[in-house]
Structures are given as structure tokens and as C-alpha cells.
Length: 215
Picture 1 (cartoon, helix red, strand yellow):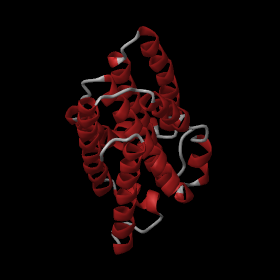
Picture 2 (picture 1 turned 120 degrees about the horizontal axis):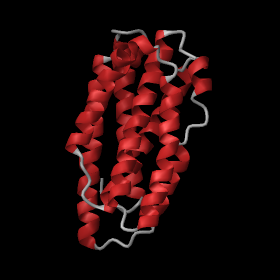
Picture 3 (picture 1 turned 90 degrees about the vertical axis):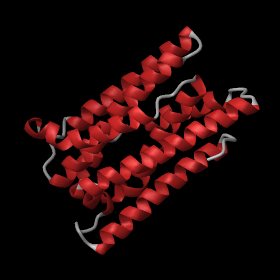
């Protein structure tokens, strides 16, 4: 099944690229897991990310997949390049912030999604993954130095996610229109896009604060 409108395609491309990124960050998390069973559990969780990416990208016409998804993946590759986690807590925080931002994006924009894409993207594994990562983070006994280092890393992740989100919406006008429900190139589109990006950053900061980390 492929999407029938440019809005469908734009949102499906973002969603699919986002879950491919989640698969990559979950692989980082698995590699830094302190115990074998934890690594295996993360690897199993990543299967849900792969399936979500597959369902999303099935909506994108095959002959234009690279054109539609490529620029978003390039932005996410830059995010990965600048935010490699070095510890298990850092990898947990990165995954929580990334998945949390995706959940916030859905919550703030779903009302504008075309029915076709909204239907196909039901059953998103994001809430379950976010809950698992949150519980794992909350169960860690971090000393002051670890908490400070993890907070610093989290701030770097938030800053980079914000920068790449701005990059994506500034270059993908159809996506900005689809997410905000506004006409491309208007002052209303700029205002609503700015509000959306600010809400995503605030949501990420709130998640860090809830875990006792300084955003």
C-alpha cells in the first residue's frame, strides 16, 4: 500500500526514517548494556522499531523513496555523528529523549494527519519502548559525577535534536505543512512550526527533570 497524497508521503517518510534512527540508537544501547540479558532484551525491542519503519515506508512510493526519505536520514546521520553515547546511562537517556520527542511530535500533530496515514501508523511501539527505557533509567543508582555527566550528554542530545529538527522542517516544506496544517510559505506556518519545535524541546527537558537530571 502506498500513500495517496503528498501529506501522507511526507509524514510516512518522517515516521519511517525516525524508526530507522531508533533502531540505530537501540543498537548503541544494546552494545553498551552491562549484562548479556539486558543486551538481548534491547535487541528484541529493536524488532518493533524495524516493523514500525517497514509499515511507514511501505506508504512511500518505491520509485521516490530515496528522494523522500534521504534528506531526513541525512539529518539523522548528523545527529548520530555528534551524539555517540559512551556509557549505558548515556545511551538510555539518548533513546528516551529521541523516542519521547517522537511521541510528543505525534501528540502535537496527529490531528493534521490524513486519515490514511494515521490508520496505517496505529500500533506505534513508542509508548512501550519509552516506558521500558524510563523504568531502566529510574532504577540506576548514579553517583553525583555520573549524574552530572549524563545530564551534560542529555543536554547535548537535546541541542542536536533541536538543530536537526529545524533543518528538516526548513528544507522539507511539504512536511512542515503536513505537520502544522498550514499553507506553505506563510507566516502562520513559520509561527506554528516554531511553536512545535519549542514544545518538543520543552518535552525533552521535562523528561530529564523527571529523572533527576539537569536539562
